Length: 205
Ligand SMILES: Nc1ncnc2c1ncn2[C@@H]1O[C@H](COP(=O)(O)OP(=O)(O)OP(=O)(O)O)[C@@H](O)[C@H]1O
Image (cartoon, rainbow, N blue to C red; front, side, top):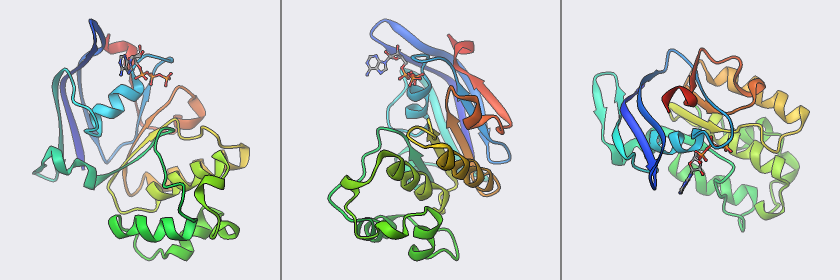
């Protein structure tokens, strides 16, 4: 899988967040998008995932030589961000049954296995609105690590995770690198220091 970015720029009102960003994201490597608060990491992620349009430039997805239409980007990716809403009224069991009608679990992994992998065995019948923020984050990360989507975008992946949760994240994300194109947006080194390539947003101001 390959994501190609050409002359990408985003402007809010009169201010450019970044400009002339040319870059290729290739599944042979893992990537970190870095920069201080307010530099534009989340904005870039939104352009890369097709959630928002850039002011100028293009984002293209390729599977081998095949171009993927922009309206189908979402079928090839998972996004984990602090702003991603879960369906709070559902219990974990109900939510997973619903979610995996649309997304495929990794080969050989059942819903029961998934629940074990995210350490939520005791919480199957609990409504998601009663999950702690760390439990929700582990669930969101698990949904991307254990899906068959070839691209995984992680925005501030360890937000709300304690030390044990962070260790869990590190183990899982490193395993995911073999199967997926992983792109992490972060300003905390421990979340991305294993990545092969760094895209520093302040270089594109
Ligand atoms: N909808 C919007 N309208 C106007 N300005 C915006 C909008 N969204 C973001 N910005 C501005 O764009 C810039 C980049 O914001 P962004 O959230 O992408 O930064 P970030 O690097 O992800 O920050 P953080 O590390 O704090 O999460 C900031 O100056 C922000 O105020």
